Length: 89
Image (cartoon, rainbow, N blue to C red; front, top):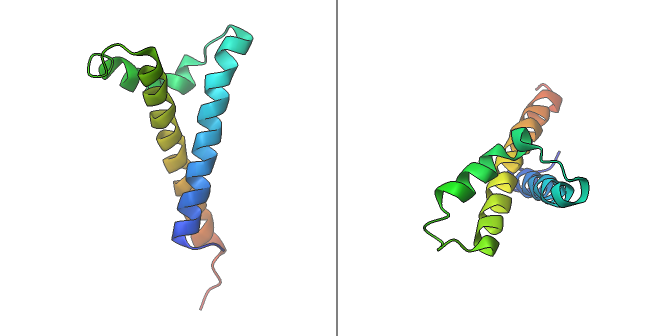
């Protein structure tokens, strides 16, 4: 099994991929998966005034927060899988 650092990198890549898919699906399908996008949308609205109302900054905040949220979830799953598959000594 990969090390903790490798698991973290894999998990963050998974989170970035999920966040990118959520960001790209909305304009393509004209349907928002708000239940899945909620962490990023909330952060974007909370910090909207801090970034001066820039749409690009709001989208960037949305993408980063969702990537971290789903990346940390993937990291937890990978860590549990690593613990379950370790050979007993």
